Image (cartoon, rainbow, N blue to C red; front, side, top):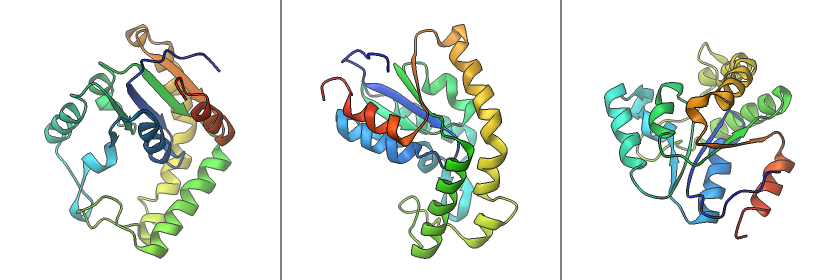
Length: 184
């Protein structure tokens, strides 16, 4: 694993749905004492309504105005905004079977507990969201391979040469990364 500078304070976590971006980002934010920003929480309004692009970008810019943060989420159109000041991008690149297992068990748990996903939205997982045309499991399956191609290209893109990229391919690598974080 590459050695990271100790002064990294602005981090983006990416990966296929179900890879554990939010959980990992929350843990990392707590470790470095930075705010955790969940892009889905900025995007989704009550009753699964989407925020307008203008408002979404305003929310992101406001959330990233500080000197320290850990943001999780993909939303490709937001990449130029969220990566303008980012120092480190961490890609959770788990295998397709592990990703599908995780996204399915997470959805089932949320359906059974009826836990609200983002405070104040009332948004909860439902059987139709698990099994219907907007299934998160189908989404994870359909985007897994294309995400690999997309993120490999992005990591090689000269526009992002100012960013350090770390690719973690297993939960074991994630745990090792967190244990070895500079200053730990």
